[in-house]
Amino acid sequence: MHHHRTSRRTLLSATAAAVAAAAITTTPATAAGEESTRRSTRDRLKRLVSRMSLEEKVGQLFVMRVYGHSATEPDQVDIDLNLKEMGVRTAAELVAKYHVGGIIYFTWAHNTRDPHQIARLSNGIQRAGLAQDTPVPLLISTDQEHGIVARVGKPATLVPGAMALGAGGSHADARKAAQIAGAELAAMGIVQNYAPVADVNVNPANPVIGVRSFGSDPQAVAGMVAAQVKGYQGAGIAATSKHFPGHGDTKDDSHYSLPTIRHTAEQWEELDAPPFRAAIAAGIDSIMTAHIVVPALDPAEDPATLSKPILTGVLRERLGYDGVVVTDSLAMAGVRQKYGDDRVPVLALLAGCDQLLNPPDLPTAWNAVLKAVRDGEISMERIEESILRILLLKDKLGLFRSPYASPEEVDRTVGVRAHLAAADRIAEKTTTLLVNEGRLLPLSRRAHKNVLVVGADPASPSGTTGPPTTVVAGALTGLGFTATALSTGITPTRAKIDEAWRRPGARTWWSWGRTTSRRPVRSARSSASWRRPGCPSSPWPSAIRTTSPSSTGRGCVRASRRTRGPMSNCARRRGSSRVTPGPEGSCPFRCSGRTIRRRCCIRSGTG
Image 1: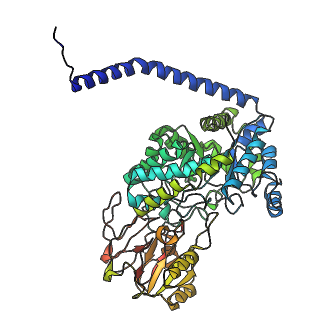
Image 2 (image 1 turned 90 degrees about the horizontal axis):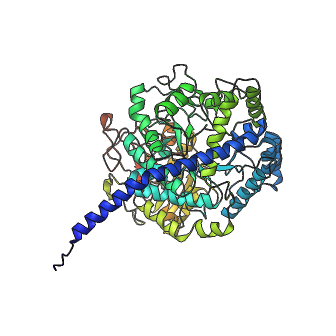
Image 3 (image 1 turned 30 degrees about the horizontal axis):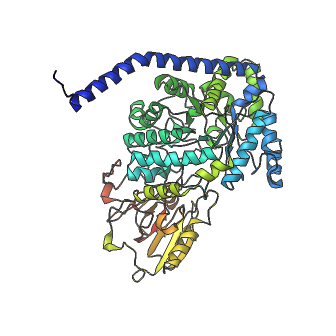
């Protein structure tokens, strides 16, 4: 009898074949089981919708701000603001009266003092939702993009913003940053994050997106967006790509006006669509609309938020998206210029939106939708379609099973050492140095004793230790420099600019956006642009608010631990970014992190 010894290759091949055969055999059954589960869930949620009153149904469509750190016992100043704006005293009363489907947290609304307080607020709001005649948990959301838009600060972990991650070019880092952020938000009871930004920032004069974008290359942005979607949603929260159909090529801020995008349909497909397609392919839970006009997509020139050709025709039908569509804030001027506050929410629903975010006057908006349904302008079928999408998302997030945050989970998750270390590691990889004229870097205390720290000091999240310029100046002083802080605001006057040049250290500037680390000098992140006085360039307000204002100079420094901008005039290919020479050798000087450069430094990317 001969004993045949089976080779390792034969064994592996046989095993692989068996596994493949098993997969082929079990896949149809698994698929059938999953379909049966989906059908059962939809039927259960449809029965829930059928038990709702019309008022409860309308309420589910709204996501509203509310003032206060507590759902039932806010400070008196917050009670007064709630009464003035919404006719209720507390978040619990807001839920009971208007049956809102969601609450959005803001730092300025005093919602985000510290992680345990946030978790208690979230639990109080969920208790109010479950105390209704038809108990329904709420989608609690916020804008935690990181970078220059963040509502929750220390001791929570702050990771690099979009443009910094774009500078690093690592999808793995982008995903890890989102996983960290998502896990910490979930621990505090925040289950929907209005991130990542999917806009391709191809306009260097963009006053509202800028460093909030991953960059100016559509395919590179698409890859980073998909990575972050997977990171956030893998951590158990809903991600939201924004601002559809793409806010990257505007020179106006939709908070204050109604921008127009002049891209042709072909240009839109090439420049704006790829990140949204990538988000949809990655399974994005929600997409936020933009208050912009795109004539190539809707000749009627309605804001995209109110445009059925854009939201239903393009997003739903052409791109095949069937998830939740949420408006950008309805309090923004961009959506209020053409129609009144009573028409905007009605038109948004008719266009294809599901969630109506933060109307300026909730009683007016809520009653307008109620009237539109009663009068037949909006069909019951239409609002139930949106409500079902919203409830399916709540079910996916586990809110019907486990709506509450736990103090123990906050302690185990928020700002833990592993997260802070990972954020630092990611941040260290996002600095790009293109030119170092005169070997100015690293900065020397002997050669450059006086340093002026200048920045716009945008609104900071909770838990910060002071304006970024002051924090950084203090850190530099501790290292032996003579450092002076100067906060310019985002629209500095000529007098403020002149004051900056008169300050000691004006020949050596450190421009700063926000300190985000336990080690402020080592790990703080920001972006800046440089120009020489008297050189032809964009006006100061434009330069200070955008990522890459045109400037004239011989070299270019771009370093961005936290942010990195698409550079329209000076560029080089590195990772996912493509930069091309501009006219007459123009080059926007740029620095950040620990990068310091001579000449004039103008804070950029305030977004």
